[in-house]
Length: 272
Image (cartoon, rainbow, N blue to C red; front, side, top):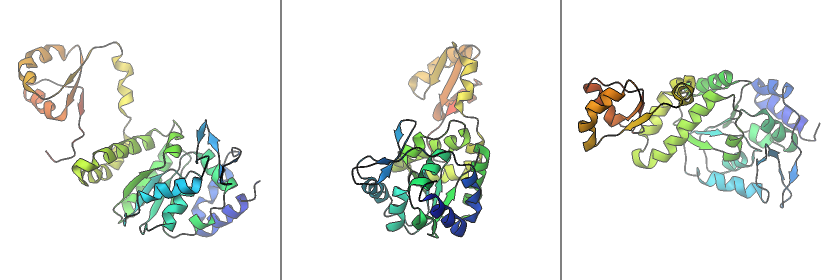
């Protein structure tokens, strides 16, 4: 038992009693690593969960990216809490909901750091679960009852330690990561679409389920362009023998020609 474990258990009991059960299932924590500023870090699977020099400064740098966000913040990754302390100490005024699927990370945080300041803040909520279905259900329950306009943040070291069995959760956050890449082009539309379809995303088996059935088979990626019309007869012949992937703007052309495709790829969130 470490000096902080009981302190954190008491904080959770007082401010987030519904989470008390996780203390009974936490694995043995990885050893603490002292950083150059005297703070602690840990390594899980060879990945440093906090910086080896100044984790506090690293946490502040993370929080600066969301300093102007007045709405809720949905964060994947509890880490060791440095970035969460910075978010709560900053100008973030909305709710901060944090997901963490890796019990080893939680064990490290609860054993090696005093997290009372995080759990006593009414803006903070931790979402976890013993399996993919439970965690996804807990997340969707919060999103369904919340009136927040959520921003998305990912604590990269924690995300790199996401257990492989949490496939549904990974589907959700891979989609949300994609949303961040396209936000500059499409504003809030992409985020609105993703949040509206979280139930479908969390229940999707993922594109990897297609891989084994098409090993050593030819594949054709169909894009929109002048060559599409003249190649339609050839695509009609090949559709029975090859795996056809079409971008969204080409799929309607194929459909009109009576040619079926196996996968439609769409990244454009606009209604058309």
